[in-house]
Image (cartoon, rainbow, N blue to C red; front, side, top):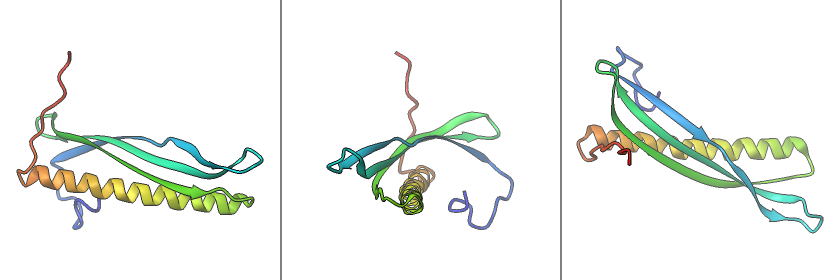
Length: 116
C-alpha cells in the first residue's frame, strides 16, 4: 500500500483484498533425480472495495514467474528462494499498482464476472 499512498493514509476510502497463490515446480533435474532449479510463481487476484458503499469497484489479477537455484547448502537455497519470491512479488505489486492507477485515470472499466 505504500506504493499506492506514499504520503500515508489520510482516511481510507478503499480497501484492497488480495488472494495470493505461490506454486513451485521443478524446472531442472540433476542426474541423481534431485532438483537443481525450481520455478516460483506468484499468482494474485485482487478486489478493490469502496469503503463507503461496501461495493467492489475494481478487480484484476497478475502473475509473475521466476526461477531459483537449489544448492547443496540449505542457507544458499533458502536465500535464493527468498530472493526469487521478492522479485516476483515486487513485479506483481507494480502491475497491480498500474492496473489500479489506470482504473482511477478512467482508462480501465471494471465489469465483474457474471454467474452462469
